Amino acid sequence: MALPQIEVVSDESDVELRLARWGLRASQFLDIARTAHSRAVDAGPLMPKSSPGMLAYLFGTEELRLQIIGDDWRVDITDNIEGVISLRFGVRIVYQNVDRACDRLFPPRPRSAKGSASENLCGPDLFTVAGVDTGPLRIAKRKGISTYHVMVGEDGSVELSSPVIVHGRYVQFNERIFIANSVAGPMADDPEVIDPVQDLDIDISFKEP
Image (tube, rainbow, N blue to C red; front, side, top):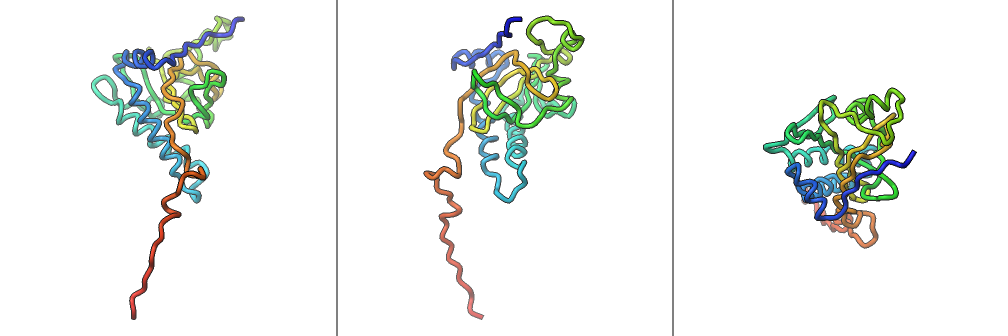
């Protein structure tokens, strides 16, 4: 069987045209990625190990809503999956941390396994579930709604893509829209970056009793 052809939109002007069909702009997704990545980097060394991913998810989802909610878009919590939805365009968008985005050779992988609720929204259609070989996997749209993920990589890369999820993994993509290879500046542990906290010279004086 021939390998499935994934639609990849990467040219800057094509990306803007594709997003404009939904009343959106690439700059909105750049702001989402910047917010999520900066919050992850800000996680302190004494915080729980999962803190970078959790902070990125919480503030990334908040920024997603701040950027997109408007006349055609509203808050969505279908199956307790937080995101936004447009009934006019038939599209749902949720936030997702991934290892990296915008890499043609190595598709993004979620940094945590996806649950059954995600698979319900992005799982294969009934032909595939029944074992009927129809060629490339197809998503079973939930009530006519396609689900896209704002995928933000650990390096600050970001894409907006529509995955097929099976057993907690992305097994295929129906469309990948590349937004940016990176929105990140130098990381805090880069030797060229000076941590302002470490450089503070605080004079402490004690009052005479």
